[in-house]
Structure formats: structure tokens, C-alpha cells
Amino acid sequence: MNIGIIGTGTMGKPMARNILKAGHSLTLFARHPEKVKDLLAEGAKIAASAAEVGAASDGIVLSLPFDPEVEEVILGERGILHGASHGTVIVDTTTGTPHAAVRMAAAAAQRGVDYLDAPISGGVKGAIEGKLTFLVGGEDGAVKKAWPLMEQLGSNIFHIGPAGAGRALKALNQIIAALNNLTLCETLVLGKKLGISPEKFFTALSKCAANSYHLQTKLPQFIIPGKFEGGHRIEMMIKDLEIALQIAKEMNTSMPLSGLATQLYRAGASAGYARKDISAMVNFLGSFVGLDFTTPSLRLS
Image (cartoon, rainbow, N blue to C red; front, side, top):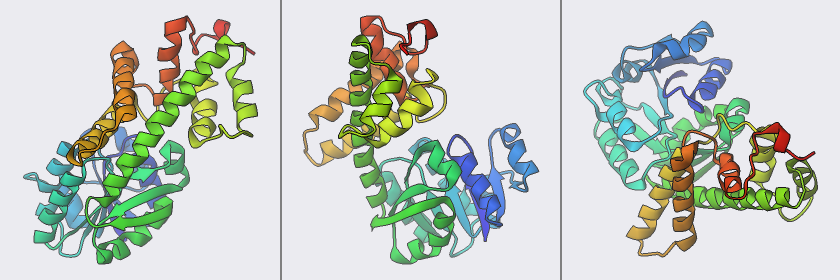
């Protein structure tokens, strides 16, 4: 297949590598070409615009942070729809609003292009290993067409429903993930006050009812080393939660825990952790009681 990708950041770059490893032709559009020199050295081609990516590709993967970027890349003056051929399929992995996905699907359909909202879960590790989970919204035919591409990038693909359905379920996923992470971080702070190290916390509770995806990933990757670079940034989790709260508002559904979680993440962002992984909330919460999970002298063995 001739594949295009727009958005080669934390998640997009490893997906691009897996597309190349699978033997596909890959065309990139990057606003900062210097950041994709490694991909060019591995065989990717670079385009001057999203429209050129559209013209060169049968399938296009988007990995962008916010809805306005998606809209610009698809509908802008030099957007995908100005270059894509009839039958091209867009697989948009952005975590955005369901309403925006419905608009993009309708606009693409007018040009004979298929659009899928297909947000992903699995983190950077899943992206690197090609073991992402896709939550897909869109027409059956488009999903079938894009399935082989998604199989190159993930190990689980779920067709949830029509356009917007993938993003809706991703919002629910993010609520659970956000609250799970806060529970983990708050409990680690108390554990450290009790003299229980993050290492022992991880080893023992991995075998107990408290085990979870976040315990298995955030502790060994970020909290135990005391390094919070990379991963899912707090500022992005705030965006995800705001999407979920907007959906809840539209459905006239109270979400008190999600609202509290959003305020806590906002407080963490204001305290300087906005661009840190969400597990850095352990340091924000720890600061209330004088604990620093990044300082070796304060780490318990």
C-alpha cells in the first residue's frame, strides 16, 4: 500500500516506523522536517503539503493533538481533500470530539474519501511494538478497507459504530485512565510516608487486586526511575477529560469524579507539570507532604 502519515510525534513516529517495516511506501508531511530526518533515512518520502500526501496515498494516518489541527490538515487550502483520490481512506487516531469526527466524515464523503475516527490506546510502548488498540467509528466498507493498515499498527481493532463512536468510547476510556492514575499516585504518596518504596509497592501489588494497566506501566517506566519525560502529557489528559465532560454535559449526565479529576490535573499543570507524563501527578501530590519522587536521597529502598 501507499501510506501517508501526518503527525510524527510521540505516537506518530513509531507508527511510521512500523508502516515502513511492513514494506509499505510511506509519505510524510511534517511542519518541522528536521524532526523526521531519521524516518527519511529509513525510506520515507516527504511531501510539501497535506494535499501532496493525499495525492500519493491510498491510506492516510493522522496522529495530531487537537481538532483544529485535524480540520486544517483535512479541509485546509492545502489539505488532504485537495489531493486525495476517490476511495482514499483517512484513519484519524486523534483523541478529539465526536462532533468533529462526524463533520470530517461528512466533508470527506462529499469528495469520495472515507474518514474513520480511530483513536488509539496502548501508549508509546504499544505504538513501538505495534500492539495498539484501535477504537473505530465509521462506515463498514471504510473499516474493512483500512483494517490491513490498522493490523500493521495494532493488535486489537474494535469497530464501535458510526462516525464519532470511536472517539466517544475513547473519552470513556480516558475517564477511567485518568482516575486510575490519580488513585495510583495518591496511594503511592501514602505508601512512601509509611516507608513502603515504589519498588516494593509495584512488586507486591502486581499480584493483588490493586493491579492495573497503570500500575504495570507508570511505575516501572516513570515513577520508579523518577523520570517523567515522554508518555501521555498532563496537558493532553486535561484535553481528554474536557472532551469527556462536554459529552456528559450534552447528555445531561453528572460526572462528579471526572470533574474533580480534571481540576486536579489542571492544578498539576499549573504547578509546572503540564508537559510531564500523567504519572508526574505523584510528585505534585507528594509535594503537599514534602515528598519528591525524583530526588534519590528521598527515595526509599
